[in-house]
Length: 94
Image (cartoon, rainbow, N blue to C red):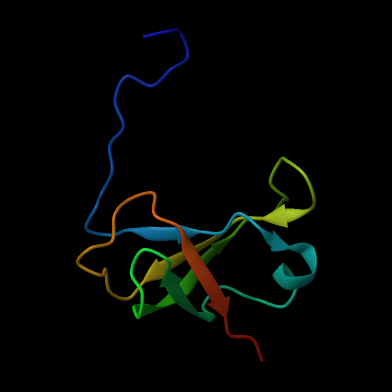
């Protein structure tokens, strides 16, 4: 193992969460903690899961553009969902 590389990664696979990587500054201004989101997955056609926004990053993520990380807690975990799968998030706003 090289210096600075993790030797082990610990995860709670019973409580998977979804993190956005491309929520724009325009969209992040329209949401709040507690809002409902519908999450779908390319790898699980026909599967839609309801979730709740539990955290909104106070600052933009590094990289291109001005995007924010939002964490969504899923109400249920589909049986075939695996860590690292791509998810698509539709956040319901008023």
